[in-house]
Length: 517
Length: 121
Image (cartoon, rainbow over all chains, first blue to last red; front, side, top):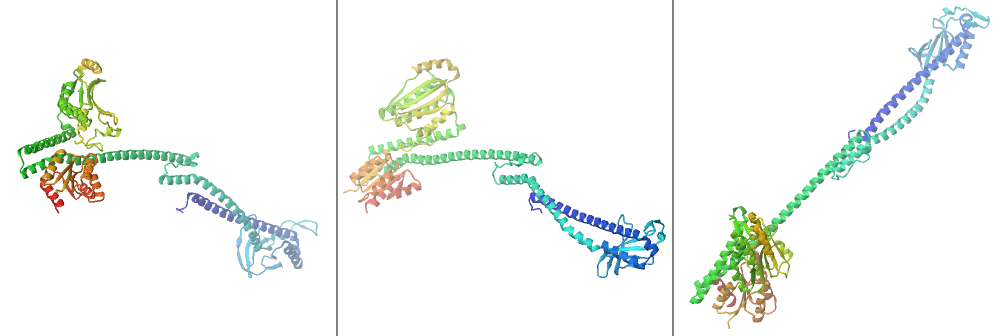
C-alpha cells in the first residue's frame, strides 16, 4: 500500500469504505425484508386461522362433528395454500385435519403483533415449516342457524388450530429478491466509487504535479514551477505557491552562485594567463640575459686565450687588451642594469632620495653625456630649456628616466634624424616629451613597450629591453604617468609627467607661458 | 691552395677574434656581418667551411645554415657559434644540418681543433 500513488490511496480508501457500507446495507436490508416478509406472512396466516375459528366456532365448540370439521379444515388448507391444517384438543389428539410427522421441533419464536404460538418445525424429509398454533377462544360468534349472538362455552375450550406455513417458499421468494438488491447496491457502489476516484484524482493532481515539478527541479531544471496547483484556493494551493516561491529563491541563489563561479573562473583564467605570459617573458628574459652576458664574455675569453697562446706584437696586444677592457665595461653595464631592475622590482627596498629639484637642470645633466653618442649617426638632439620647473623627486632616478628614453631614441633613430626633448606644464603637472624620427611602432608594440622583459619581435638590437620598464617604475613611484604615442613610419614620442612642487604655483604660470612660446 | 673559411658574426669584436684565429691557422678568410651577407659571400666564394653566429640581423644562423646545406653541389662544413646555450637550440642547430655546434664563450684552442678536424682530413 505504501508504494501506491496518492490517487490510488485515496481511491482505495473510499472503495473499501463504500464496499463495506454497500455490503452492510445489503445485509441489513435483506434481513429487514425477511423479517417484514415473515411478519406479514405469519400475520396473514394468523388472521386466516382466526377467521376460520370464528367462522366455525359453533361447530368446534358445540356441534363437533368430525366429518364436517374435516371438510372445513381441508377447505381452509386448500384455499389458503397452507402446508397443513390440523385441529387438536387439549390432550393433543387430532379432531380434524392432518400434519406430517415432524422430526424435530424448534423453540417457540416471538413475532411481534402475533397472538399465536409460533414454532419452527422440520419434517423427516427436510421440509421446514412455521407451525402457527392459534388457540380457539371463547368469544362471541354468530350462529348462522340461530340468527343471533350467543355465548359459547368456548371460553373454556382448550382446542388449538395448527396451520403450517412453508418456510422454503419464503426463502424462494427472498432468494428472488437478493440478486436485485445486490445489483442495486452494486450499481450504487460503482457510481460512488467512480465519483470518489474522480474526486481523489482531483485532490491528488496538484500534489502529483508538485511532486513532478520537484523532481524536475532536483534534476537541474530550476525554471520548473507548479502551475495548476498554484491557482487553487485551498491549503494545497497555498503549499504550491510557497513551493514556487522556494523554487524562485533557489533559482536566484543558483544563478548568483553560477555567476560568481563564472566571474571567479574568468578572474582565475585571466590571472593564470597573465602568469603564463609573465613566465614566458621571464624565460625569454633569462635567455636574453644569458645571450647578452655571453656576448661580451666571448670576446674577453677569446682574446685572453689568444694573448696567452700566441706570440703577438706589442701594438696588436694593446689593441686586444683594449677590446677586453671595453667588453668588460659592457658586461659591468649589463649587470648594473639588471641590478637596477631587481632593486626596483623589490619596490620598498629602494632608497629614494626625494628632494626639491629643478627638473630643467636635471634634464640638461642627463642629456650632456648623450650628445657624444649622437655624433656617430649625425643625429640632432635638441632641448630648448624653459624656466626652472620645481618638482619633488629623486634627481638621479629622473636622470635615469631621461637617459633611458633618449638612449632608446638614439638607438632607433636613423642617421640624420632628429630627437626633440621638451618640458611643459599641463594641468598642474610637468610633462616631459622625447620625440624621435625613428621607424615608429605599431599599436601592438606600443601596448607592450613598457612591459618587463619585452622586446618587439624582429628587434635585434642589443640590450636587455629593461630601460623602459625601469623608467616606468621610477615615474610611477613619483606619482606621474608615462606613455608613448607612435605610428609606424611616423616616429615615436615618449611622454612622462611629474607633479609640480606645491609652493611654486606662481612660477609655473610663467613656465607654462614660456613653454608655450 | 689554402682552404677558404667564411666567418659571420654581427658582434665586431667576436668577428675580429674568430678572424684572427682563422688567419693564424693559415686559412683564407672571408667575413660577413649579417645573414644575407653571409649567404651572398658563400655563393660567391664557395668556402670550405662557414663559422656562423645564430642571433644575427636579417637572417638567423639557423636559416643561413639550412639554405647552405639544402642546395645541390658540394656543401660547406658549418660550425654554429652561438650564445644560445640551451639544449633545444643545439638540437635545432643539428636539425639545420650544422656539423658542429659551439657555445659562446668558446676557447680558441677548441675552435682551432675543430677547424683542423673538419678541414684537414
